[in-house]
Length: 114
Length: 111
Picture 1 (cartoon, chains in turn brown, orange):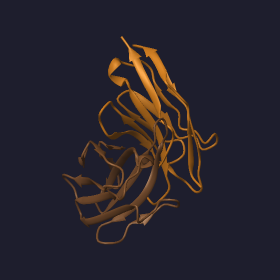
Picture 2: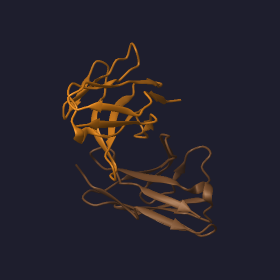
Picture 3: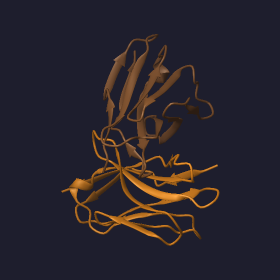
Picture 4: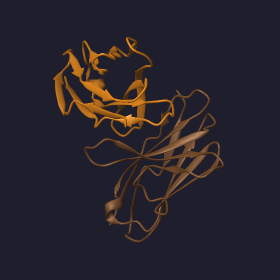
């Protein structure tokens, strides 16, 4: 299947700093990318949907000013966690959809805010 | 709204045992149903899917049948291997490609 690469795989940052997570579709053009968050022993929760060249659509309860999403090209979307706090520590996963309409997932990013 | 309820784990089995993971859903309209698998250290991979009632998805010896009357999509495998150890997620989407996931079931297969 198609490959989606997410970087970094894990990151530790200090409280108050910002962290950027990248999601790249390596061998297809992703018209839509999704960002999910997974708390320990819980399911994946959709945070936002991003379409190339337009503003992201956030799910209810997700702070758009805290979780900045940019989908500048058909192969790259970024999620920036701004002014991170310990409660933002989580596992973040992206998925990408192209013409095949099947969602391909990145390997996830483990964020720990200390 | 859409929701998925999945059998809680963890599940520990011996090799060649029969595996069942229950999944039921609530959705408006006619969703597509999926099982995803996450091997240690890797991202989610699509294991199988079914897009309409009575469809059976199958892959790598795993099967699941879309049962509209019971709103279920239970995952089964007749003889598991150690390499099947992973976390399994049941999921659904309607027509907007947004996925709603179950909580995930951790399966450990012992030799």
